[in-house]
Length: 176
Image (cartoon, rainbow, N blue to C red; front, top):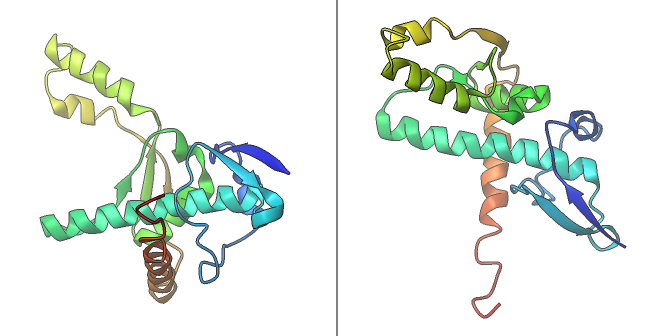
């Protein structure tokens, strides 16, 4: 039986939570699976909830990889992560992100800041705001997630994630 699954992790949080944690030792499910995915449930045994949870966890691990590279390049350690966008409404993702990074994750009152940023830039250009400090004063925190995972668990999960990712290298032949 084939099915198409549209992944909207922010809308399917309860379902993603229903399976608990994924077992990364035995599966490579945590690789990013954005968009629509065709599934043959009988062949792979994948469940909707597992894929949703995998997307959430893959997002957090991939964010960690980027931030680790930024920290290494800049020599500045991350002390908190301010987030925005559609996925920030997912409480599970935000908590897991804080856990994996080991720093607080902070969501603003206005979660969709791309359009807001354009409005701020226009306002600066026409003199509505005198300085960037005026804009900074408009920012307000909606919610903060503090890390709850101990360092040993964090390191173990990240090590398993990196191992799972490396297992996907060169799995497609060049003639495919």
